[in-house]
Image (cartoon, rainbow, N blue to C red; front, side, top):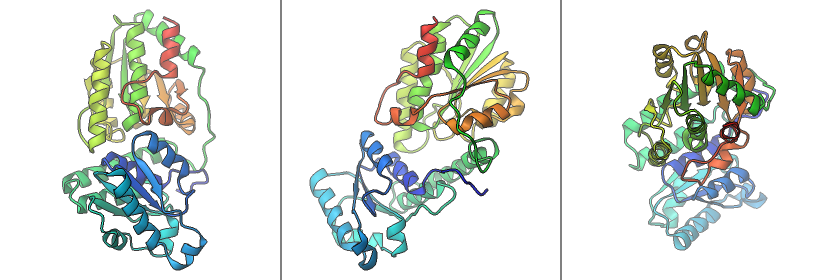
Length: 354
């Protein structure tokens, strides 16, 4: 696919993977502005992100010395348990040897070096590069590396077939008005229609997407609705802890969903959830997180309500026959750094109609 719209960066994907591997300090080996926004967001999530701040002089003569200096600084000042050096376009173009710099620095903290740049059409290259480095360092077993490869391929396939990458350019949209959609959803429940509500969210975004299911349950606790969530405990350390916290938070609010899939399996759960929908035979379905993971053949004849955080996901979801599409704007930044379920906009609207 030849994209003409911005796509996620492999460098940023490597940073997020380092966080999921419980890295305390990540060092971007490149210019100070590289991946600035996401670096700041990840610091909200508890991981320090430093930079070697390469300038035009290092572009010519190399940046080994600044990297050694920052590695030593990080160990001395932050006492991390794990560190990661993440390459950038600049450091890869000039041929920096990251592992040699780590060895030269003499740091005792377990540190991985991730050789990556932004010149990949698919950002999963950054995830795989970080995981391969982690596997070489003994941080994850080979079996988990292969599992992650499979899940990443499935997630990419979903995006290419039914997601924001299925066309070269997709017009962003704010989706439907939340109060109109909420009124329709609650009216179906009140008329005695049977439904399913599914959380199939990507990693930490589930902290807010889960609130949509909780809000529906709070508004209509006696309704004939079956709930499911991808909160099984599998995957990288942070992902497992997030699933445990979110599941506990939902149960604490009186909702104990059927567990189907893990937080990193959002792209591979389509058939699993689809078969469950068929078994339930609902009149309507509320799909929250990554709704397009479920192939459309499973929702034929079902009135579908989708909640996504992607403005470029609205048009693809409508093309799948989803009648109502709601966008939770800026949901991902809002879920970084939190450790308990946060109220969603759509959830707040439903509660206001209660």
